[in-house]
Image 1 (cartoon, rainbow, N blue to C red):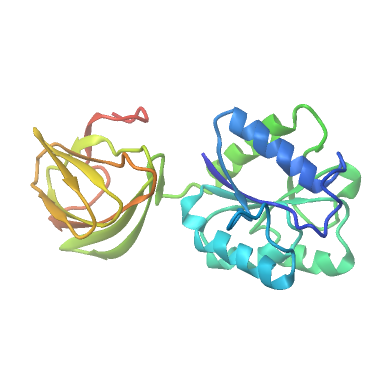
Image 2 (cartoon, rainbow, N blue to C red; image 1 turned 45 degrees about the vertical axis):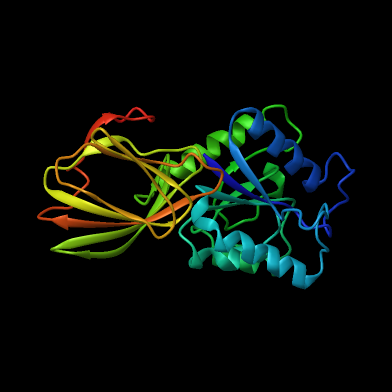
Length: 273
């Protein structure tokens, strides 16, 4: 599971307060990482700075950085009030927003607009705003906070199952026609697809970024940006990313059928063989 964690702004309660949202997010992030969850904090430090200024320009830039990378994550967890909700319709990644305290009447207008599109968590039953649908109430100082959030994450991912996301990465369909299908595929660092074959289609892989280790039957190839390889019909094949950055490649499928049920898996790191 890959979580983008949107840190509260410095305008929130000071970080040194144990009951502040910033302290709560720090504890949550550490607890999730201890349980093996891949968490990326936004904003990220740049040029040696521990955090950018919290001016409007800096806030806008850090939000744009997050949402431009939204496909890299299974879920975005927002702790920065209501402003990030305006990006909801621009991305397909589910957004969870923790609402600290009772929202003001002005903020409630935004929360109400995205009610049913964004998942809301309240920090206490007394802070719940009438008219909003909450997926859970989670106390931020409780020892069960991390486990409670994990349950919410899994529930959201069950509700918003995404065909384009896989344990190894994600893809975007660029073209889908009777005689071909084209995908842009991202493979996360250290991940690989299953060893598989297709009976009704061939494939052509063209690497855009990163380095690929490709297996075709008994042949093993390394491909870099600009390099390509053909995958014949009925050949056993696999692609792997052994590097520290995402592997991005274009897959062109040709044949008579392009359904996911034309995948015969022989080995798989995620129990699908």
